[in-house]
Amino acid sequence: MLIRMTESSVKKLSNGDRCYRASNGVKPGKNGCVKNHYLYQKQHCYPEEKIYHVAHNGGLYKRPFNEVFEETPMLVAVLTYMGYGILTLFGYLRDFMRDWKIEKCQNATEREEQKDFVPLYQDFENFYTRNLYMRIRDSWNRPICSVPGAKFDVMDRVSYDYNWTFKYTGKVVKDVINMGSYNYLGFAENHGLCADAAADVTMKYGVGVSSTRREMGNLAKHEELEKLVARFLGVEAAMAFGMGFATNSMNIPALVGKGCLILSDELNHASLVLGARLSGATIRVFKHNNMQSLEKLLRDAIVHGQPRTHRPWKKILILVEGIYSMEGSIIRLPEVIALKKKYKAFLYLDEAHSIGALGPSGKGVVEYFGLDPKDVDIMMGTFTKSFGAAGGYIGGKKELIDYLFTHSHSAVYATSMSPPVVEQIITSMKCIMGEDGTTFGRDRIQQLAENTRYFRRKLQEMGFIIYGNNDSPVVPLMLYMPAKIGAFGREMLKRNIGVVVVGFPATPIIESRARFCLSAAHTKEMLDTALRMISEVGDLLQLKYSRHLLVPLLDRPFETTYEENEE
Image (cartoon, rainbow, N blue to C red; front, side):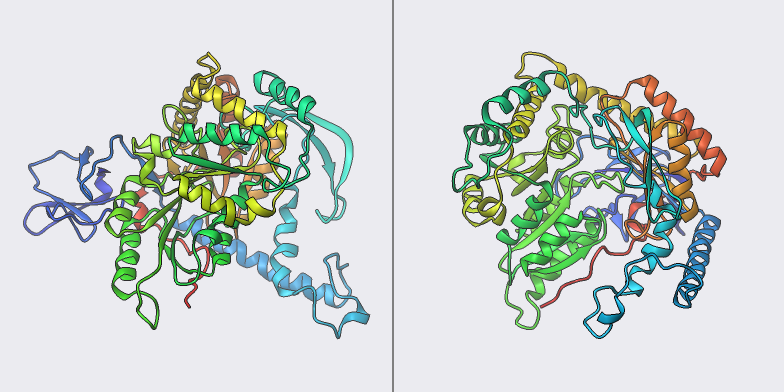
């Protein structure tokens, strides 16, 4: 395992030795290298600022794993809390004025003749929406009117009632650099091989199937896609679904149920959370990417069994993602697999953001770490990002796919995937695999990796606080204060840069951010333009907070995404 040691993570011991904080939260090994989260080395053994190889669960990382999160400056944290406090106070004041008809109330309310019925609208639950979100609502849901490629066109709109409603001006903002779409490999385009192939299939098969796979909607194209996906992933079989979100939310309940235990990363996507809740299984949450937390839950599950009865769990399923789309972090898959094998659990890996975007051949986080796909029991991913299409897949053993084909709600009740969408996936995947007779796909993967490293390095050099892994194409730039969320989005759009801004409750309250997504379609000139504008807005809004005080991931606080569900 690779652990980066910095001076800020060093403690002096009474015997003259030094102990280094283990920044990746590894579990102590029998060799005594790691103790109480600190790596002990004799003072004369190793110079500082080097990367040390430490075995964990009998394995080594085959590549450097650099993932750092800089500590939120204390003053910034205090001012952020104060900002939310002031907004909350003004929100209560405005609600008081609305109750007394001093200010016009535009939010949804009960009709007077229905006051005695069960309420449809919970007034306090909508407090955040009407008093905080409405102030910056113009930063979201902006309609575009072109292909969402490296550049796109945005329809101009204005609001005369403080973002409650919008009116279109008829103007179009042309050639906005797209820094927010998940178009990792640049296949979201209206020309080229994929677009032409999808157009040909549309003329042959039409757009819709109007049936499920179990009835009249199982086309030869669907069979071809699933065989191709299985070959691409290196698994026995695969199954495709028409919606990425439903791939998780509808298939997890088919895999586990009552008497089973789900161990879920606290930052897992809402589709994984929903699927876990619908399953009826007991859910326990471990700290994000923290292997000590995961191992403790696994050990406790084995030792104590089910609540009250203490019977063994029927199944223990670990839910993780390849790349976490809000943090830009990459799952520590070698350690997860080692723990999964040690405690005889099952592993469900969501590669929605990592498939196509990581690995020399674009095969995701498994290839990125040089691991065997057979070590992952359920491999899930989506076609909506790197492939520029729609839908999702699950890959694994043939017995698993046969079971899902008869038990999954998505397989039994959902309409089949649209033929042109299927063809878009087939053509782009063959391009990535090099089966089109060119190196076009491999070149795009390489270009994405270069763009990612270049963009991240430049932002860090400018003094911004950046989260995540150095190889992750998802780049969160920390904004912190609520007023700066809307201001950053507006100022960037004024400079013809389209960005995504994110705040509470999607993130912790003091960790609002802008999220950039890199694409192979971005040229160096585009990135340099975007970087120049980002730096300009960063100076204007005073966003360059970085003091280069990096804290280990293990110590980074974060509230769990959802509560434990005990029987």
